[in-house]
Amino acid sequence: MSHKPTGPSDYYTRKIARTLWKTKRRIWKDVSKRITKPKKNKVEINLYKINNKTKNGDLIIVPGKILGMGSLDHTVIIACLKASKSAKKIVENSSTESKIISIEELLEKNPSGSNVKIIV
Image (cartoon, rainbow, N blue to C red; front, side, top):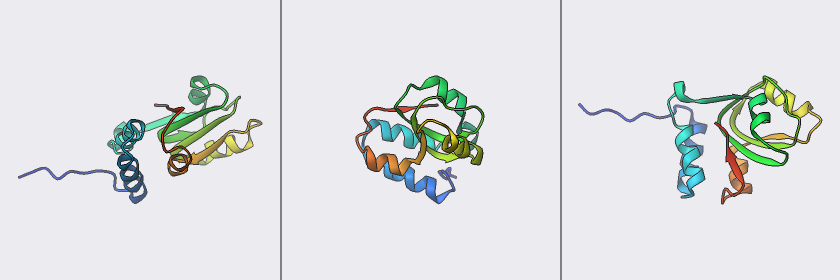
């Protein structure tokens, strides 16, 4: 008996992964692979790690979920698959002009993927 291939059961995640893969850009294919990993290997990253790994004006992508522990002290644009309510609240209320956008929005703004960092 053959093994049935599985993937994300969430329609939104499957749609984004397919769209990213079709771009044929290395960065977007890498993000697509990371998004479709099993749940136990999904990325969950706190705001304080994002703050430590980025500089002012960086454009980053998190192929997973952002959690609300910590704060941001510089401007960062974060594209992610999901964000917790507390993370959204902290980013919106911070004194910096940081914002959280969807991966689709980032793909539309920057189809080439230039100057985008993947934070894992």
